[in-house]
Image (cartoon, rainbow over all chains, first blue to last red; front, side, top):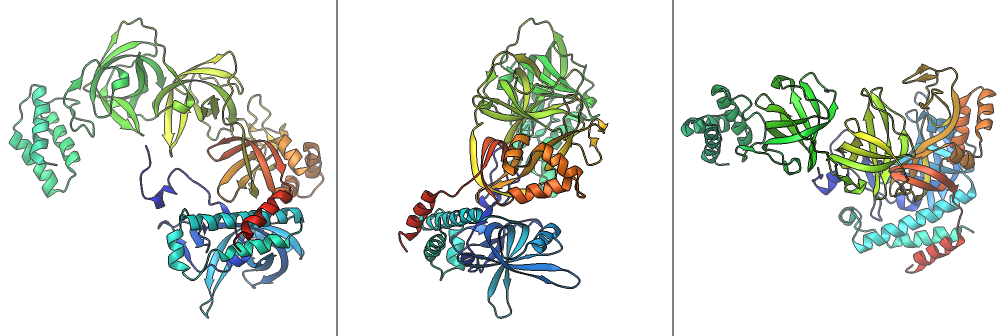
Amino acid sequence: MSNGGTPASVRKEGGFEREPARRVFSSELRECKYQFREGDDEKSPTFVLLPTGERCNRIFLIGTLTEKQRQGDQNIFYRGRIVDPTGTFYVMAGSYQPEAMQQLAKIETPAFVAVVGKPNLYQKPDGAYTVSVRVESITVVDRETRDLWVLDAARSTLDRIEALIAGTSPDAARIKEHYPSIDPVSFRKMAYEALAQIKI
Amino acid sequence: MDISQTAERISVRFSQKGQDVDKKKIEAKLRRLIDEFGVQPAEAERSVTNELAKELNLPGFGTSAGISGSAGVKEGCSISEIAPGEWVTIEGKVVGILSPPSPAIAQSGIIADSTGAIRFVAWAKANAPKMAEGSWYRIESAVVDEYKGVANLKIHSGTAIKPIIEDQALIPSILKIGDLKPGIGSVRAKVVQEWETTHERMLQSGVLGDESGTIKFIIWKEAGKDKLAVGSVYTIYYAQVDEFNGRLSLNLTTASYMKDEGDIAVSGGDAEIRGTIIHMAPGSGLIKRCPVDGCNRALSRQNYCPVHEIQPKFVYDLRIKGWLDDGKKTYNLLLQRDVVESLTGITLDAAKELAENNPLGMDEVFLRMRDAVLGRYVACKGREIDNRLLVRACERLKVEPGDHTALLNRAGGVA
């Protein structure tokens, strides 16, 4: 009756639970250099490890779509740049996300957009990492919703930093191993600057 | 496990039946299975016991798995004391009969005495006499095993069933929903919500609640079973409490239920979740419902109701199914018509007009609603059941200047 098992498997037992959409600023997402998979199943989720100590399989972001570009001949896909107060998110939507691609194709730049998507880590030939977000949905929103997101992302970032410092973050050990040179406290400054940029 | 100990245990069980079996012979059989064939000791014990029982013509002896350690039949025990692995003789009243799920099962149902109730299964191979609902029986030498974590009485070919005269009124003890455990339980609860049935054999499913909590319920189609009325209070005797993925649910198919007077203040109806709507699922927007009285199921695009087939005189309705995400957890969201209208600003009449005058039809309503709600911050008030949020009111959030200042202070403290 009660489900025993290792902490890793506890996540999966207790039924199906969707991966929540994490709120993260672009300049934190840009620092990600480590991606891992939990479990050996074909459908096991892949997580990108945020330097502030949380794994994410899905993210929610709001920013300004400044540029979009259609690419590919056979397999058409769209790339977009979405700017938040701290930097730029790179997003893409291809033919496997037809709805998201059509939405992205339709939106006129510049516009405030809300994006739900999956982050993916790529290594460039020169060894540097980039993170791009595969769009699940993208919608035009108003400024107030954008402001709400900046507050939300700042709150989530501060929560993660505090959990990491307090040692309650579930992935604290992974952070030490994979991001030895990153000081999580530096993201507090980033959050401050992001908050300072919005006028309320 | 020590093989000679196991052999000893088996021989004791047989000598209790008046059969002397050579311990050496048992041990040799066990050794062969365990050492030569790598059989698990418990399985070896079972198989040797069965083999000997067959040889000695002791039908029904040792057919169950996991009987190790139990010796002999527990006589005249009360139902609440029964534990898996035991052989028991009980007296009780059949309070519910289920139609057998498989031809291998002759009869299954629920038998109760003054202390409790247990599910029973009579195998077709057992050739046991059929028991009648409402009658009392003495069941001798039945085996108790565990099925899906719940004790279960197995009636096999070695079990004797005798009708007995007993004129005792059984009053099961009513439990609070929060105190239910897998097995059989009786509750007094209010029907909080009815869900669309997802299977043609399903009569009704939904949520029951009392002061202590809420629980999912299901009734399968059986002769003489009635639906529960939403909003009414019922006393429910002998429902099966099942566990799936750590969550309990009540199966009322074997239960008897009576409508009750009064009302219950159901707990848990005032959750408030703040987050963003990150997905709007197909089946949202303007939908058609089955007009048949009491059905109200959503129809397919071709006006097909899973139960009542094609219904050209459907009724229009609005709803939004989606995901609400607060960054920590994702909830399944269900918004009813009035909430959809106030959140999207599109009334049912406006939606109908849109659908009728637009080349995209109902899709146009879906797209407009999606553009109006996706990515938006909202506060949803309602009832939360297993990640599912049944929303009573949903409001757009506004920026609170106080939050901004507080966050700036929090972030600036160490910068």
